[in-house]
Image 1 (tube, rainbow, N blue to C red):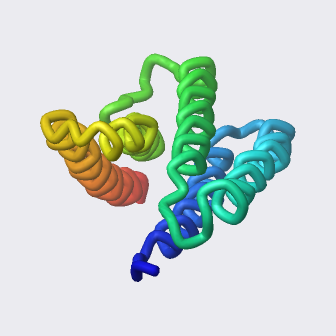
Image 2 (tube, one colour):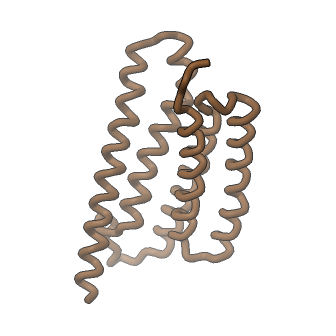
Image 3 (cartoon, rainbow, N blue to C red):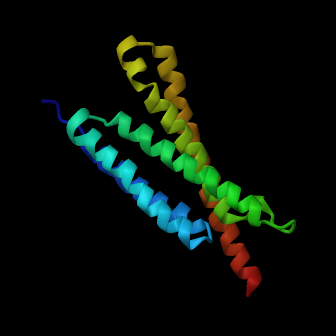
Length: 165
């Protein structure tokens, strides 16, 4: 058996799902919505565990679970955008609003990861190296966007707190 860190990546995906679900649910002010998100989050967690343990195996990369987790988080981000636009007034500067910036970075990150892992089996079995180069570049670029938007969100948050004082 080959030694691999895929099992760590599978557990990391579950941890990311739990943390980002909690973060995205906390952005919406509706308490009833938050409780329902926490209940619905059990579905992708359980399905991911089934994929990791029974379908693809514990020591292999659980691509089905990653795609499922990414779709769930992208839906939560879209729900946050909808609630933000319903609650926002004309004074809200989205390009300086830290939750919007963080959610946008997460959107880019999870859309590209979901695309990458949805096409993963195609890349492996067809040995299409041109597609592989493009598909690995997209998550790298989205990771840079995520980190850049998170850094900018932290700077905006610091400036907003400093201005408020």
